[in-house]
Image (tube, rainbow, N blue to C red):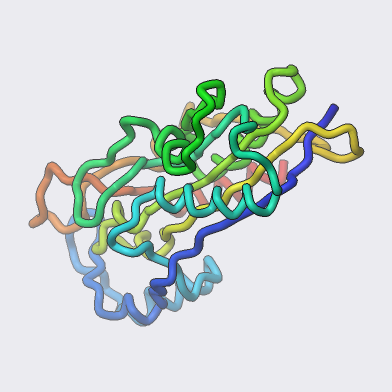
Length: 247
């Protein structure tokens, strides 16, 4: 027995933030000092490194679990299944539900529970839980779904990746340009057909790399010290990926 993706869905926000929209931002160094380059140069260099020219931000009234729900509805419709027969709902994210202009994330109840509630699923044996796994969260969720199915614990799983990172970015940090919002969902089912996951290799590098991504203060020292934003050592992450992922 292996697995098959029988349905997919996504939610891509309509609000577009283009690179040139960052020309008016006040980017600062980590110590709060001015950067000795015009924003046009900073933005162009960012584009050359990442290839990103625009990103999507969620509507002010939507939160991450809303995006996950909207993507899930499309995946269920695409798979043509009865939602009451879903055995697991796995939602991967980093920061939970963050309302617009809020300084606190909300993960109680977990986002998977909120998605199940929005889907109006009554079956108590449909288990809903979250995983905090960074960028490859959906991939890890799929690996877990495969494990449940191969162990005979499930036949159908809904795996979702959802995030509203625009709510936790420091506008004074150049790295803020890389983050955006959206959600994707897949229905993964047991199958006797050929295919499935051919191979996978997962790892956690934490000895030197644990805090390459972290929550920290704004680069603007005049802002509230109690407010935290998503922060990363971008160059270190970039070099780590180039050196380790191909291996």
